[in-house]
Length: 165
Image (cartoon, rainbow, N blue to C red; front, side, top):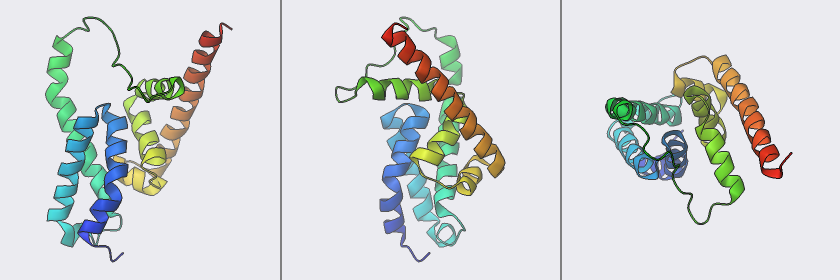
């Protein structure tokens, strides 16, 4: 692919921010991770631009940055108990369905959530998602199938509760 670093960053930015927001649950953090990941790609564009999958390389960097962030705050999270147990309030433009789907995705085990985000939100092919997750393509397929099954179950239960069934 003969894409410039600037074109690459412009193209990937929206998907990467969205994927990292779904992965981290924090828009601000997602934007920070995206900026740092794309800056690293820009700095190494002579190598990254020639890679088989520059997209997967940047997603891997972003996932590593998110993991580092999670590790830095893990001690604090364990020390703090949930004071009031309230979830973050949805934004005004969210519909009830969007809120339910986001909550169901957030409730997935981390690797299932990540596989789902990379495959369907970031729109990475199985092979690129596997490269970003550092696992086999079959693992991505399995995690994705389990995530979809969990979403179907969780969202179906939520609908039954909501309708009084």
